[in-house]
Length: 176
Image (tube, rainbow, N blue to C red; front, side):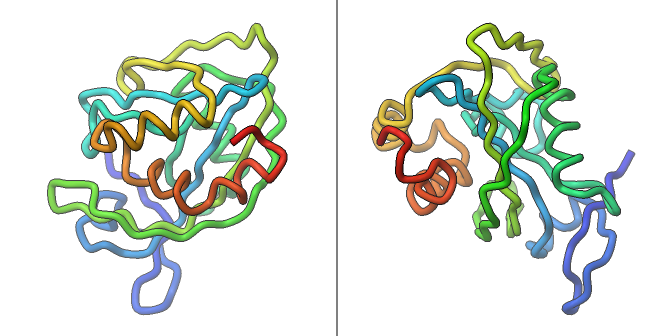
């Protein structure tokens, strides 16, 4: 089953098949969510069956809204679908645009709505095995160190977010 996502074709936002958007490197809408618990960030390792960047560590969740779906609804939907997370309050942190080669001839050229949520200490996770093979909580300084040491273990977008947009996402008061 194909998924139609909002992408710009010849300057016009149109419904485009997700894989086609990546093959053509079309600029398209996306969401990214970071869930925090105290000073820790929840990251996930993408399932090996994912069509790009399988087995790499990424932020809490990210996806593309369906055609006609607003970004906040999409973010809540994917938190539940990927990790079984419900009931968190999402805070919109802004919009980020990036372009990255994700391998296999695929290009992510995304206009991303970024959300941040604070979780309780007892947050229950129920990762979907088809989406997520592992999760962990990690501080931003430790994550930054691990990305510097083994960048190929992390998705291109997570590396871009932390290198170029950490202050936008986490604010200046978040531990660095």
